[in-house]
Length: 57
Image (cartoon, rainbow, N blue to C red; front, side):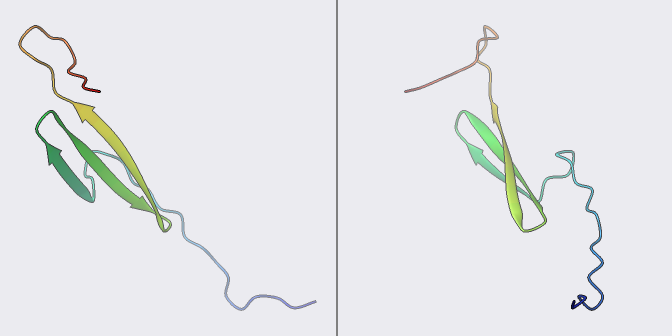
């Protein structure tokens, strides 16, 4: 049986308090973090003056 040489992996700790990238849009933004080769995103929509979320189709 073969054993991998030095196959130790380190854990990563990431959160959306400091995203790796932020993409702004007219009605919101997308925050992106990269963890272990994957990209994870969180979409945030702006509210209008009445406190209603703005959606478009």
